[in-house]
Length: 255
Image (cartoon, rainbow, N blue to C red):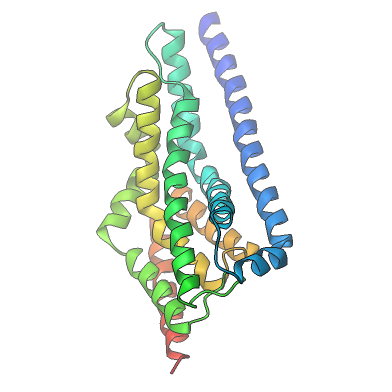
């Protein structure tokens, strides 16, 4: 009984420390985004000319930090469960997978996505479909992005990935791997499911502005509700229907 109580106390302490660390990382990401949004005028002036390698790097950094700020909160229950299982295995003298490796793998997936998003932003700007303020200049493009995201919300792939994101215990039981390499692989796998769930929603950032913080917050909250709230899957479907309607109205406004 004493050993059990001691283990529970350690788990509780580790949970608080991990929560504080995740909250701190998320807060730093949002502070960076706020500072970037404040300096938007300078950034837009730089983007009025052809991109340099430095411009691409800065845009990539912005996307990578934004993905951390938007996605880490919704992954927190999975990370906490992973850490608890890992701690218990270590206490029993069994091989364990470090939580840092899992988080690194998860973030690596969204960092990879950030390269794709940066390249897409560059192509849209080259085609004069995105303003220097990183807002769509075409109602048709905005409508297509909204309708595409809405349709994807109803797709089998979306719901297969969302189901995995909403079931952290099932993910742990089915795919536990030992060691540092195993932790990274599990982080990559969970990140892949999360990416499959949310990547189309990230395209909506081009509709109202990549650095429109209200829009960024709205998408982040929608992802959080969809993944964590009771009947979040239903919320996702209803949101998809609204996106289709909004996309149709925006596209029609071009004619």
